[in-house]
Each structure stands twice: as C-alpha cells, then as structure tokens.
Amino acid sequence: MIQSENPAKRYWNLFIAALAILNGIFVPLYIVYPGSVPFVPNLSLLVALVFVIDIYLEFQTVYEHEGSPITDLRLRTLKYLRGSLITDFLAALPLLFLRSSGFLPDSIPAILFFLPLLKLLRVNKTLRDVGEAIINPAIFRLAMLVFWILTAAHLIACLWILVSGNPDGLAPTDRYISSFYWTITTLATIGYGDITPKGSTQMLFVIVIELFGAAMYGLVIGNIAGLIANIDVAKSQYREKLDKINSFLKYRNIPDHLKKKINTYYGYLWDTRKGYDELEFLHDLPVALKESVALHLNKEIIERVPLFEKADASLIRDIILQLEPVVFTPGDYVVRAGELGRDMFFISKGSVLVLSADEKTTYATLNAGQFFGEISLLLSMPRTATIKASGFCDLYRLVKDQFDVVVEQYPDFKQSIRILAEKRRAEIQAHTK
Image (tube, rainbow, N blue to C red; front, side):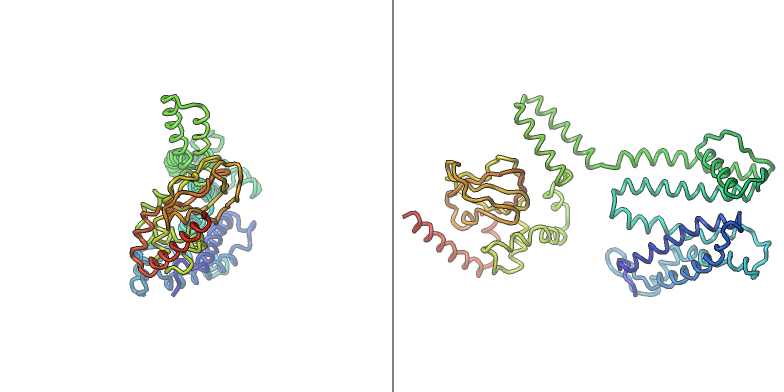
C-alpha cells in the first residue's frame, strides 16, 4: 500500500499532471491537423499505458478519513469509484493510436478522441497541493485561473477548426492563430464580427461558446477581483490595524518620537512575523499540536540552560508551554539593576547589552540562543546588572510563579533546584563580603 503523503507518490502525481497537459495540447492539434504532429498517436499510446499504471497505483493508495488511514481495499475502491475512476479509465483508452493503426474505423466520431483530456480534471488538485505550499495561495489560484482559460481557449480553437474547416485556405499555423483569435474575442465578449459562422452547425456551436463565454467572463471578473483583494490578506489587515493605531495616537496627542517608535515596532512585527501573534496562534491550537509547535520553536534554547541540563523531557515540555514571547525595541530596558527579579529570559533573536547599574560599563553582549536572569527563578533577589536591548529583540520570558508551579510536579528536580539555589546564595554572599 502507498501512503498519500509519500513524496514519491507526489512526484508521480506531478508526472501524471504533466502528461495530462501534454495530451491537452497535442491531442486536439492532431485531431484537426494530423500531419502537423504525426508523433501524437504513439505518444497517446505511451500516455495511456502510464495512465493504466496510475489507475493501479490509485487502488493501492491509502487515504485518510477524519484523520484515520483507510487501508481496507473495498473502502478504497468505493472511494475511487465515487471519485475519478470512470474518468481515469476513459482517459486511459488509446483510441487515437487504435484509429491511426487501423484498428478503429475512420467513421468513429472525432469527439471521442478528446476523452484523454478528462485526465486534466486531476491536474487542478495535484498542482494546487504543490503550488500553494510554495507560493502565495492567492497568486497561485490566479495563475491556475489563467492556465484554465488558456486551456479552454486552446480546446475551443481546435473545435472551431473542426467545425468550420479552413475556408480561406490558410496554412495550419495561420489557421490555428486565426481560430485562437476568434476564440479569445468570443470568450471575452468582444466579438468584432470579422469571423462569422456559416450554416446551422457553426451557428449552434457559436451559440454554445457565446453562452459559455458570457458565464466564464462573469466568473473570471469576479474571481480576479477576489483573488487580487486576497493576494495579501495579512498585509491588508496589518495596514488596517496600523491606521487605527495612528488614529488613536493622533487623538490622544502622543508625542511624535513615541509615534515613530510605535510605528517602528509594528513595522518590525510585520517584517519578522507578518503581523501574526504567536500567543494567539498557539492558543487556537489543540493541546497536542500546541505542545508540538512550542517544542519545535523552543526546545533547543531551553536545553542550553545548565539549569535544565538533566531535566526530564516532560519537565522541559511543561516549561516550554509556560514561555511567553516578548519583543523589545532598540534601547528598551529588559531589566534594571536593583529591581526585584522574578523572571528569566531566553534570547530568540537579536542581542542585549549587560551593563553596570550606572550604565557606564558594558560587561557583555548576549546574542540569540543565550539567556539571563536564571538566578531570579531560584532566589527572587534584586538584579545585579542592567540588561538593555541593543536592537529589536525577540525574547521568551519565564515567570517564577509559573516555574514554581511546574517544578512542584517534579520532586526530584525540585530538590536539585533547592540545592542549586543554596549554592548560588552562598556564592553571592561570599562575593559580597
């Protein structure tokens, strides 16, 4: 059995999509101008064989229902039957090859040779699964809309050649361009009238295309407007939020230097997080997913702290869930010397300066991955140095009250913390004597 998320299966689906697109380009051209693309019958046989293999692989593919994998063959077959089995089967019929080889009569309706194009119905899902993970989903949907318009125009242009023939005796390339031009003007509802139908068959065909074009025109206009509006929803929401903030700042007569600092702060949030609030994001997740994401974000930085070197994995997880993301702007005080400390900090991004109480001496510069304030978790004593942000800093804060609640659940770790606290207290007292 094959897992639907298997990377090899994804590449196979992309390969199938590429063959379906090739069919969509060359099969209609061969039907109207066989001499221009003589290789198409052999290509269609090769593609049909690959499509048969694809049907077999689809039967072997496990799918998920409500998060659970469905491995039962009967259920998988029923799902495939209700889905794309019939269209996949019809697309795998090598009718074009059979007729060119003389196994089918020339009187068979030409429309049947378009059956391989049914595989194009699979293209949209395959490309969407890949494309939306790489580029902006709204931009990708816009690109897919253009793709389908051009695909439909190509097919209609070939059908128009099939219906109307070549009354002007144009070369195949010129005739196709003329037909494609007529298709675009008709679908776009422009209709210059320089190419007109003759006879009932052509008129009926044009009526169908005009109705299709009118419906598609409205659909395209509505979709393009919506897609353009949603190309960057996050930025639109960010700008709206910033407008409200600036209106409030103006209303409350906030000084210009503070306005500038506030706008710079929100600009930094946009540049680094695209306006998203990490706490809000984690809050919306179920507990299991919240733990997984929090562990991915912070496990490495926590494990660097000597305090947690020998801690149990479950303790590390509980500590990580208590971390609170905070942002400091350039020049902000993270802590001040002399104030009572009841939290420690982990630097995720940026750097801070460790200064003397009078800020005349710089003891050190701490960068991403480092930490400070661990003594506050142990002793709740006054800060011994001032910590100041040298630029924008993303930190995680662990408050002592929350730390103590977690530690209560781990008696062995609590005892080791008590011993470490007494050791640190003795060291500080000896240093101050």
